Length: 143
Image 1: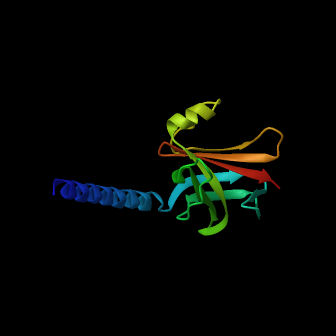
Image 2: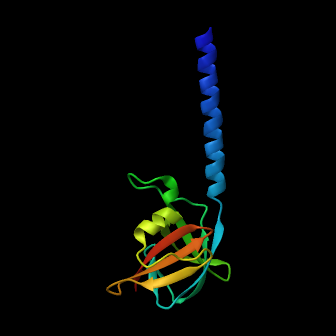
Image 3: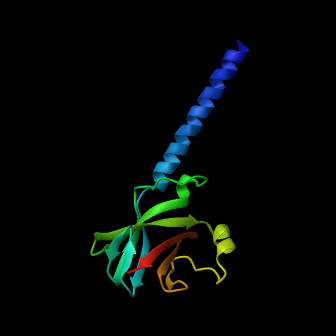
């Protein structure tokens, strides 16, 4: 009898835990504006051309499929908007402050800031946004 009660308790705790996780995931996948960036050159985003210009960036509700060894929240689709219209999108790598310190050798970006950098060789651009201490790195190929 004690084993049945204990087993039912474990199932109840797991069910509640799963519901909380699902609720947390649903909350974290809501679209959020990250800020604005100015692209000085045309680039390719998700295999499609994206013209030079100023864009508002927004985290999409849609989540990309994680690659092997990657947690679901380590990558997000980010949309490039002009006048409220999505002009393009690309997958962003999502890093917290500690993870960013490990990969950044040029200092940290202040919260609420954005930077567009041409990478070595001029074939790629990196858009780096820090939104509330969460860093989004978007890599775009030059057109």
